[in-house]
Image (tube, rainbow over all chains, first blue to last red; front, side, top):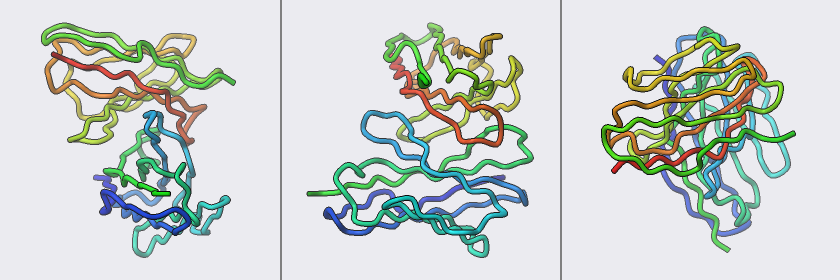
Length: 116
Length: 112
């Protein structure tokens, strides 16, 4: 069965520090998709990135970057030069192709607190 | 484009009652999924509807049901409410699969 583990429950940093969120996944499927979502205090989940299992290229989007390593089943997320607005809960999620749909399995989430 | 909307935003019910939550997806999106979020269990998948058919189902009891209409709007129903059903219920829509899902603001259900 699929599983997503986010070992860090809470991370506290001072503004402008970098923060890396870990995500480890388990799946028997050879085709799968990995996601990161942000949940600010308002509660609405905001999509950040989708990565398929055949694309191990790292990606950078502004201050956000993602490191996908199939060898270690990890899909880590780094926020560079953090800002107070980055304070939120971040979720890593997995979708298996064999489910033939959009079923997401979420990790437990990592709460990031950026202090001014 | 308007985002995913959910109504009502807040709901208070008592044990044994039933409740219906509504979700309007982004225009053009045919897939609607429902998730339950609680402090103890985290985010859990309930079910997904695509073109009025249930395509996936999570591990929830039969008290949880849903449906999708021809305009892609979806409803979720919980019968015989229990205290443990208190949660934030999130709806997400997607144009197809596998695609990123866009979430609504959620309905916070409190069962007393």
